[in-house]
Image 1 (tube, rainbow, N blue to C red):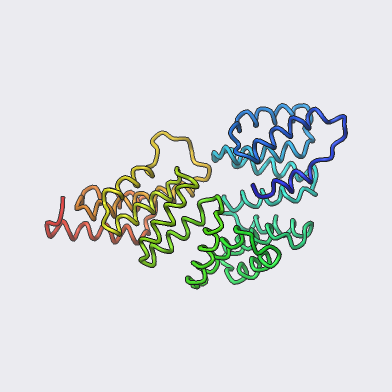
Image 2 (tube, rainbow, N blue to C red):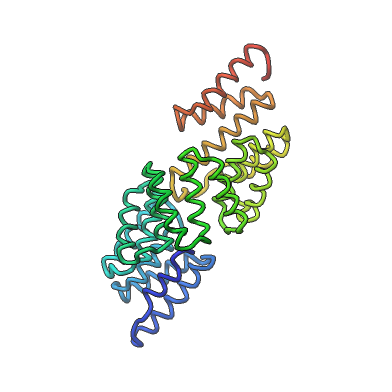
Length: 329
């Protein structure tokens, strides 16, 4: 996890009298910075530590990370509060500003993210990770040229930083430099980044360019990183549908279907975007198979979430046209 080493280095150094709670913090830190398999237990232990020592900046910071890992909408707000409290206790915790900036980006608040990162860079000038995320903040603020400038600074400091190259690719897409963006994504994917976002972006770019086989290969690699990613399966369904492999498309779409009665997603707007993509692909697949009533229902579902969605509007119009000509049921 990015920032783990920084966080540990900044927050360690307590006196021997604090060794017992520090040993507990070390156990929690090791779990959260590994796979976070026991996050509920970690939260309980951190709360016990804070009951004993409410001024423990590290405990507040780790609790913020734990809440973000748990990921419900309510706990994301709690995550922000814990990071803020850690910084109130010790403003020198530069890594905490990185975590806070990431949460703000997740919440669609890039201006707040930029503010935190600019403060962090006054404490750690030239830090490539901070510069990379600052570039992404600029991109989300609709400043792609500034984003490219800042991210290239990060790559000058560390050209192997895959995260920076991923953000650079997104900014290049925003500037219309698609070939350069694809080259950056291909470089990221070839480095086995261990996260699915570059595979999703590269697969999408390949599909948009009509490179279906390349898309299926990239997306398939992504599923080995995260087999449960609904975005990957939706894109795989689109790829198989584009290639006429409708049964495979159905199988992939089934893996991406929204879970009835599931827990609230970490970030509601992200879950809505995924659901929108699912129903848009569901409509496209039903339309291609001549299931016009089902396709119309899927496209209407998209329009309920996004009344201005052009793809769903076109799909619904095509359903109407085919019904008039007797092209399905």
